[in-house]
Amino acid sequence: MSISTSSPDQRHHAMQALLEEFAMRGVDMQAVAEAAKLRLLGSSELCLLHADYRVQCARAVDELLSQVTLSQT
Image (cartoon, rainbow, N blue to C red; front, side):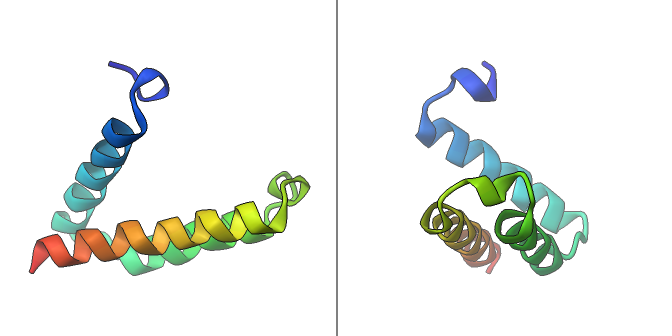
């Protein structure tokens, strides 16, 4: 299965599994999330997209990170 051909639910679970693995290895997930949001909100390539879409993506980063954090407790 490729990520590009999987369902949104499968992609979500795959991303969550990756984030959990990174967190278990000691990766600072808060720093990763902040970097991802900066990339989404400030990228010159992504600035061509609607601001609402970029904000939705940044919120999705926060939601996914909070789910990973909850699953670790």
